Image (cartoon, rainbow, N blue to C red; front, side):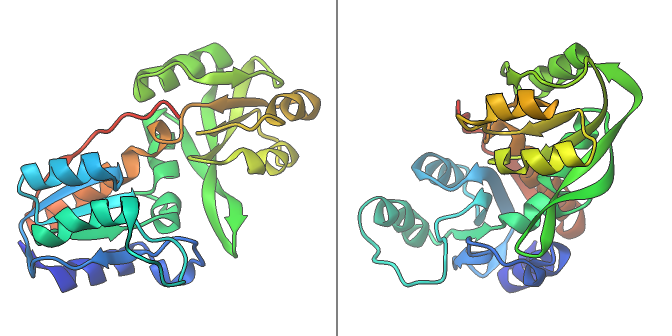
Length: 252
């Protein structure tokens, strides 16, 4: 077990939150009970994951997508009120880590996805507000594009959207989980054969074809499951916590 304040300070330091300028509020978003023994993790905080965390008797819920974005004050009404109320009633804390959990070189969404696919992260990629978030990874040995697509499908439990444009043999893969289509130009400029992300845009297909790079959109939620799970394992080992992953599949 661990004091809530110590857990938050540890995560803030581990993920280097202070170096990120983020639209999200990183760290403690809702303060609950002072001691954490049971930690639930999920990709996003919503009614389903909050209620499941409470049913599991979690002391805290840690997510990638929290409830508060930006620094301006908000009215606690509607959907936000309905999400916050059970946390407050049941004294459950909410922690959220957005860009810091994308970027971490070992526990982050992008690094973890590379490791799961048998790729080696070699170069930081996709700078947002002064900090690199994604990774360029190397396929060693080079592998057929169809094999990479197959292993992505295996790890995300869904068939990805493939927008062809690059070679049939893959050597360099730019990885930017979630909404990463805006990094397509940088991926092409840096000699990548594939951009692996969560969501594509309407313009992505033609750009991929014209830039000579394949885009694989494997799902926003599906590409961002691994970071919170890796962080949960790390925190369980560090503090002796009981943890669980609340899988809430999303077709987007």
